[in-house]
Amino acid sequence: MSLFADPRWRDALSNLPDYLGAHVRVSLAALALGLIVSLPLAIFARHRPLLRGALLGFAGIVQTIPGLALLALFYPLLLALAALSASTFGVSFSAFGFLPAVLALALYSMLPVLRNTITGLDGIDPALIEAAQGVGMTERQVLTMVELPLALPVIMAGIRTAAVWVIGTATLSTPIGQTSLGNYIFAGLQTQNWILVLFGCAAAAVLALAVDQLLALVEIGLRRGSRWRIGFGTAGVVAIVIATLLPGVAARTSYVIGAKTFTEQYVLAALLQQRLEAGGLTATTRAGLGSSVIYDALRSGDIDAYVDYSGTLWANQFKHPGIAARDQVLAELKHDLAKDGVTLLGELGFANAYALVMPRAKAEALNIRSIADLAARAPQMTIAGDYEFFSRPEWANLRSAYRLTFKTERQMQPDFMYAAVASGEVDVIAGYTSDGLIAKYDLVVLDDPQQAIPPYDAVLLIAPQRAGDAKLRATLTPLLGHIEIDAMRAANLQAGSGGTPDVAARALWERVRRN
Image (cartoon, rainbow, N blue to C red; front, side):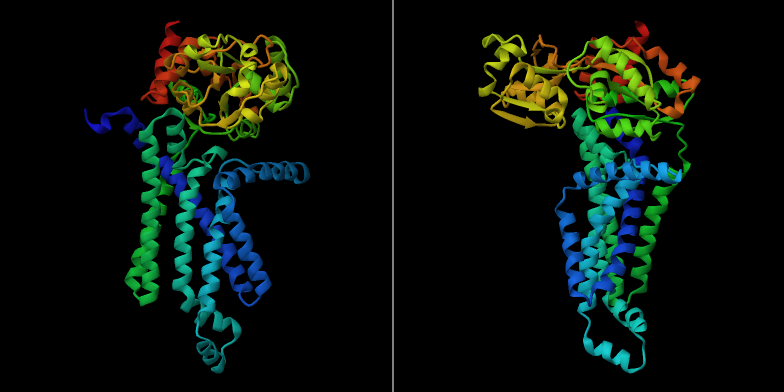
């Protein structure tokens, strides 16, 4: 079989125009904004030591902030500003995806541009400046006709560095809703599809190297006074931009489906997209979004639909304290969602709850059947959870209800947790009840007699602007109540064991249709 006959390769290649185009657009916008801000500031600050030190210090501090954290910080800030603008001026804007990514990446681009511009200008022979002033040039003329042309090769070196940094860091913009080559990487990590991970890394590296070499031609051309090098390098960059803008101009998507950062969400988003397309509608997905980001994106209309879980919304989004029965959670949830204009279309038919999970052999050897049994041995054990779990109310409820204290708490990418507990790297994990890896690794879900973990019915949510969309409702309604837990586990296992979310979603629909 040909390598490219593998559905994982076909899936990667089919998404390349969209992902690459979006990646270039956000990188270009961020770099342009960074240059527009950094170059004038560097010129203004070069003879002002205090301001120069402050600017370089600020830009240096920005570089110490992890890229993902910097990108994530802009989202709530812009969300608050959008709400303030809407209430004050009646004008709002999207805090999702493109804008926070551009602002964060622009900050990342500032340090090399500031530093190289100041260094380039400071490195000019003072005698040349005196000669220019001696022939009657004004300060502005000296700057534009002597200093900047002489410093331009050094400035271009800073722009090259900034471009590579921005293109690389842009892969981290996926969790805040910006489509990029990072979509490959995040999806591949979640589904253990290493072809996607390698494809995303390689595509980002090739793009960064191509832009760097084209800018290097411009830099060398400026140093040597070679017009053909300057022209060829500039034309190459323009060609890349035009080639990646065309898919974005041509794309006309009617619906956007959101997905969180784990395998099941990729499968369900693919299923919703496939059902919409089967109904004659066009759709795309925005995957890899955090729990709070995805709900805010739905509420503000940046996505049109996604699947969430009743307990997550009830405890985390709407901050209900304590423990409640399933019917109470769903009733209160519908009321809370209605206040935001969000429609709970219905439940899909299965629940994906958090659960404490451990190897069956170890649980039987230690006579542990429930979390209450686990509590006595927990101080000698290590537990692993996903990136959110230990800061969620469910964990606080578990500790309070069972007086749980573990020797070590570790955070891991979700699929890695299962391999870690199966191999003995950790003793217990906070897993998910609909995960097919539970059966694959022969793990056991511990009972929760205190019902400290709320119910997690999978529910389909519709954005406020789609509340009256009869065609959307009619297309997605056949899914409600028809996805059983065994079918979801099988689909999750298929997607995370060499398959793709698209293939797993089609198999899941076939099981739903037969039932």
